[in-house]
Structures are given as structure tokens and as C-alpha cells.
Image 1 (tube, rainbow, N blue to C red):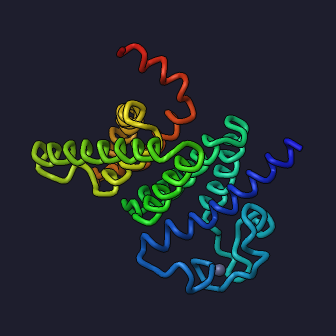
Image 2 (image 1 turned 120 degrees about the vertical axis):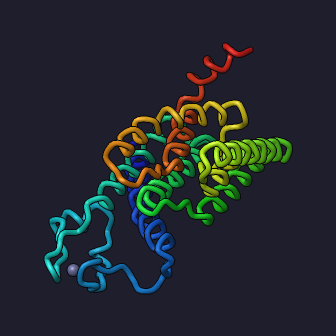
Length: 253
Ligand SMILES: [Zn+2]
């Protein structure tokens, strides 16, 4: 039976991932989500339903478009596998519980932000809003209104804190240091992790971003570093290792 759930969560993750890739790409480019239907980005040929099955279509087609033989970008395929695996891990770690649904939301948000922020330097509003609403509903249904409102409070504190950092950063560096998307994402960090853990995730994210920032400083002419992927990755890590991080937290009390 357990195997059935593993397969179910893998399929769910990979199907959602192919949707997230479409959302992350199309909305970032200001295009419609619905029209045109999924098509080859080289020859615009509309894809049939059996060419839209996550993971398998890419394997059947051997990574090429059937009509123009152009290579299909491999990152969607990899993203579908990665999301499937992360969904399975979420279930394996948390079982059916409040934490599982939070884990799935954070994983989804992470994939979406990776797609839109690394490629377009954009964090879309709609995934943040939807995640926020879902997290609030989860807190309400598994706990109570008070707990849900505490989450909102921590989200607002994180939001204001990041706003302040962004403001100081802009004064010091004389240019925008934090994007609006990063600041809104901080609200989700506070809401999902609560304040202390969200602050730890913030610290962790700067460590995660540092190697990338150094490399892009050396190799790229454009020194802009998207911070969103590191913020959400750190949030994900802290959430999955909450117990480990609670040891660190105890050192401060
Ligand atoms: Zn094609």
C-alpha cells in the first residue's frame, strides 16, 4: 500500500511540475495561460495529449519534437522528475499530516520561483497569494484561528523586516537590493515557518546565495543575482529539518 502512495505522490508532483513550468514561463513573459495550447517552442506545432504526459513524452520522443526534430529543452523533464521525487520525500518524511501539505506547498512554490526567478528575475504574485491562502486554511483546519492569525502576524513581521533591509540596502548600495517579490516571499516564510525559524531561513539563504553570487560576479557581465530561489530553498530546508534547527534555536535561550 505504501508503494501506491509513493507512486501517487510522484505522479502528482510530476504532473504539477509540468503545469508549474507553463505557469512560470508564460506568466513571466506576460502571455496567456490557456491560449495557445502547449506547443513546440521551435515550430509552434500544437502537441497532442499523448505528447503532454510528464516525463514519458520526453522519453517517447527521445527529447526531440516529432514535427521539426528540434531538441526539446531538457529542464522541464528534469523539473518533473525533481518535483516528483520531492513530493515522494515529503510524504516519506511527514506521512499524512499538516506538515505534508505545507511541504507540498513549499515544494510547489520553490519549483515555480526557480523557473520564473532564475529565467526572468520575476517572482509571480499569484503563486504567493495562492500559497498564502492555502497555508492559512491549513492552519485553520489543523489548528485554530488563533494559530492561523499568529502565522499571519509572523508573516507581516517578516515582510516589514525585509522591507527595512531592502530600504537600508538601497540607501547603502544606491540601487535596489531586494526585489518586491523577495519581500512578499518573506511573508510566506513567516506564515509557514513562524518567526524564529523564518529568521533562520533568512540567514541560511544568504549562505546559499553567496557561492552563486561570487560565481556570477566573476563570470557574468550582469551582476544581478535572483535572491528568491535561495530564500525559498532555505525555507524548504529549514521546514524539512525543523528539529535540527530547533537545537540551534535553543542555544539562544
Ligand atoms: Zn517542433
